[in-house]
Length: 494
Image 1 (tube, rainbow, N blue to C red):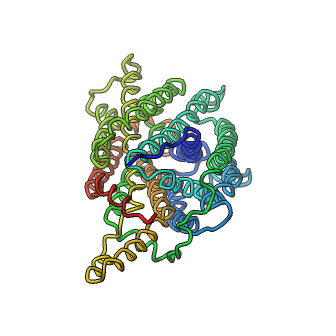
Image 2: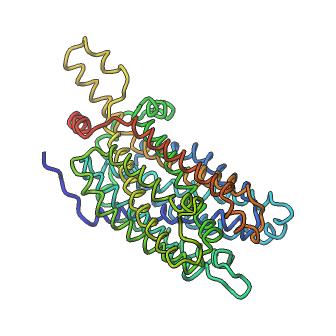
Image 3: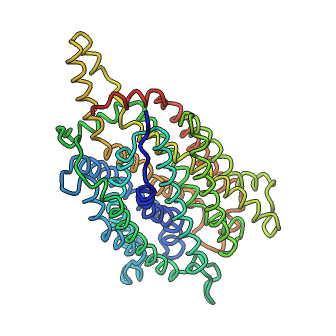
């Protein structure tokens, strides 16, 4: 059966929707812990706990947004009203996150609870409003295409846009904002740099949200035939999702994967600054190299996935991302990595950055595409088996009803996966706070503390390794194949 082509404009504006999320990920993962801990003076455990609390709130808001979007009826369709509504509040909440009021900061060194409370509230608002955009925009994927490989291409493009945006904003930050001053020797400790970064990032978030919504509006901001079906109750829909073994597999694989990634990104600046003793200008080249890795992954992914099973590629990529993404720390512990100041240090780090970026993007692309493929899957229960003794016509009606109900849950699917991926800034940053709590909250001692292989480096390696192993384990439980997906598509009601 011929597959309808998707024009470049649609691909571009769909992929553009990943930019706000990418910028938020870079900000929460790499900068937020360092900013609130090292610059504003909030303890690492309180910083991590604040973001974990925001994650717990997401557990309620994300599926609620997804269910509401699935069943929203308006002349602009199910997704776009929420996408438009989220733009301005998301940008404002993000900027305020980096601008705590002076009266809170004045007492934060002695009494940290006001600053902690401010971080909790601002993080909840930022993540909540972004979810109002991210979940409906993600749910457009199965509406744009139902083809097995075409979905991988769209997911790959969107993932690439998200990665490039977060890497680009990091490069801009290190080159122009997080720079040393006469009184601040390390640029990542420059408070004004974070505020300037926040204004630029907030403006980009606002512009790309509106542009993506407008760019996909004409074709997809419309009612569909499926909207005439009776909506499923919220609790019923949520319970139904977790009756899917394949959904549970991808959900928990995402949690494990993004927890590992979250710990890695949150600790990246700490290791670069205090273990490898890199300056901001030495850290900056990691960004362009990561962009090259992202572009290479975007080129490579559709080619290696053609006619192959997504699960197998995701498992291999997960294993390789563990190796390349975390090799520098154990090699340094073993004494097999270039010493600080060596001419081989930065090239060695850059090689690892390139390949870790490639394999993380391939893994995340495959998992996103695997999620979209579940939309058309039949529930793994006995509903259809009960109809075996009925006439064929009744069975066909029952099949169509189940399929219709299944397709109407795209928002809930992607809300659940969005929640699992937000653990990158929840459990990941919280675990980073626990790891950092092993050290004294004193900049002068950090280099010595990070050099101790039995302390922070060892705790870090154990945490990310277990998370990667869990990712691979859950991916092995995903059983939907290319052939089964094709059969599910054929069985859909016209």
